Length: 141
Image (cartoon, rainbow, N blue to C red; front, side, top):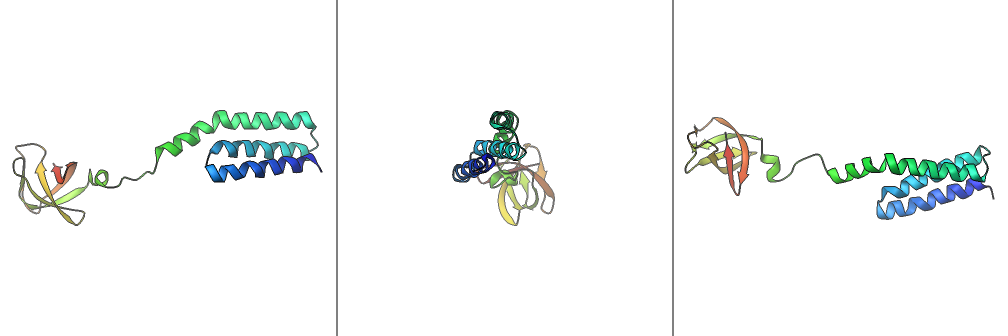
């Protein structure tokens, strides 16, 4: 059997743990094996095949792996829950001040609200921006 077939079988074999474990390192080794299969298909000897496998795999590990891990750790690019409400615009339903507070309509729901600055007062119908959520109370400006 030709050596390029063995390299392709190795690439496929390395793809299986990639799917099972989701570790990108296996993909990098599989790509290295694919490059070695290409080298073998073009007539390269055993030593060049191994050198290509090692060089491509090592280059991918050094340059691509850090990028892949940064992307995995970053997580989704959208905010959910209380974090998504920060920065949203709301409409005052009952007078909001820095003391007792009042009520706002935020994303279709009525929330208790308090002015961020104690001297501020917002009248019904006025638009306010949510700065922070503390428990079930929105701090607005």
